[in-house]
Amino acid sequence: MDTHKQLTIGLFGFGVVGEGLYKVLKQTPSLKASIKKVCIKHPGKKREAPAELFTTDRDAILNDPEINVVVEVINESDAAFEIVSRALKSGKSVVSASKKMIAEHLPELLELQKQTHASFLYESAACASIPVIRNLEEYYDNDLLHSIKAIVNGSTNFILTKMFEEKLGFQDALLLAQQLGFAESDPSLDVEGYDAANKWTFLLTHAYGITVETSDLVFSGIQHVQAGDAEVAREKHYDIKLVAQAKKLANGKVAAFVLPQFIRQDDHLAFVKNEFNGVVIESGFADKQFFYGKGAGSFPTASAVLSDLSALRYEYKYEY
Ligand code: HSE
Image (cartoon, rainbow, N blue to C red; front, side, top):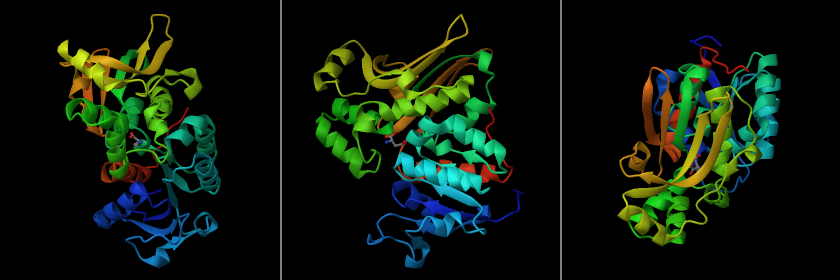
């Protein structure tokens, strides 16, 4: 795809992220990217966009030769996989935010991309506004990456912040996270650690070049954390955070897990509150680096989709 080419987008999903992208693209005309059609599931819903933009027919996008990019931001993993594979097979580039689907199918989708002239990008699928995937992929040599410690789920971090700093009950904090559009439609994916573990699998791929399945990881969410736990932790100058961690061992293997942890209050990750995410990387020569930004929400997530759309202009691809 040359740098001057118009990106004609078929968008799947018009929820928090899809609608965010629609609004963001209206404010970024210099990108020369426009949405031609949006495929949605529930046509009756009131939406702030012209009715003729919407369809319930996947083929109206997938069979349209003028659409050269598919942006897929739906919530269902199986449907997302079908859409993404069909789009790649027909030579359309794909930008996806479906973390669960990516965790389940990354190797085959990267293989599919290799066979076509398309690109498959998913920066928005982990840590939303933090450009973590391309950084891990491009900046660090696998061998020099000693460890990564990160908060990769905005909802649980939001809930813990509200519980411990504003004394909100768990259910009220969760409800707020849902109302603000941070939580998954099935919030147990956030609360029980699945979302963080799913994201961690492909972040590990980009960090260390390894293939990991969610079931390979030891993980838990915040379902067992009690309001009183923070009192004890804070007296000793610790906070409780859901932390994803990976470390390169002396034998070359990578140890990785996602668990709630006590984090010292002077640790970089203790600075990460509410729906923010944070990533601390320790690597040879660079030493310690800290990346910080909003990890959930409409515009922060759309900003990462936007960065992928820009990257498509120079046919950026991940190859394994
Ligand atoms: N439910 C996810 C989170 C949304 O809270 O991090 C962003 O991936």
